[in-house]
Length: 302
Ligand SMILES: [Zn+2]
Ligand SMILES: [Zn+2]
Picture 1: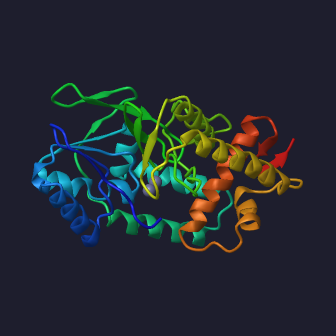
Picture 2: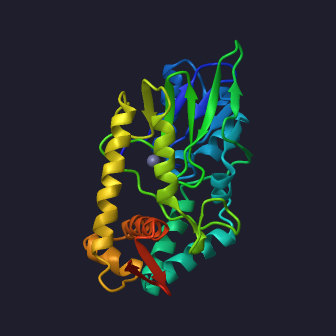
């Protein structure tokens, strides 16, 4: 993804939104950026995290250690930082049921273990949708929960500006990454309740953000977005096309992994998990929309 942005809100309490990867270079960049604005790491009082991916939350624990700052994150994301057993087991179960071979699953698990090393675990407080984060002088940020790319992905809005994390990125469609969920999660897939309907969430979050009167979206990666509704329409068109493409590859019935290999034959390494996530997200939505059916682990057109 290249560069990742952390945003400083220069109010009282001094607030940092996202923290970068847990690499020495990223830590140095964070300290240099703060210094350029006249602050030190120790001055940070509050950290807001858009989502638990290592490029956004990686330094949260490190910043907390050096500053004593409160770290706020949506509980669906905070739980991922804790690397609970159910999350890993749930991920394995979904990879297994999608038809991914065991050696591929083992390779993906190695990447997840490696990712853990780039992340330090803070103690965190739960953010909720609509929560107001106050500053001295009456200013505030509002938490806007925008799930899809990640289960509890959250943006932070003040007036017509949204710090949007990875929900809207110029020139890239964020991947609806597969998310195992605990029983009873409101966005669990009806036909496979151990995972979330990530593309359904993402499309709903696009509608939500399109309805907001924004002039500026500050993304986690790439250029600021001045025309958020245009990006939303492009994303919707991309996913509608992809739904048809995925449907056209089902023939008489295929596993999610077989469709992944057909559509993304050249991807390697961790990208294979992202490709499987992309395919599974579209397959699940096709079933929910009654265009496909899942029998055993085979998806077939209806
Ligand atoms: Zn992300
Ligand atoms: Zn990111």
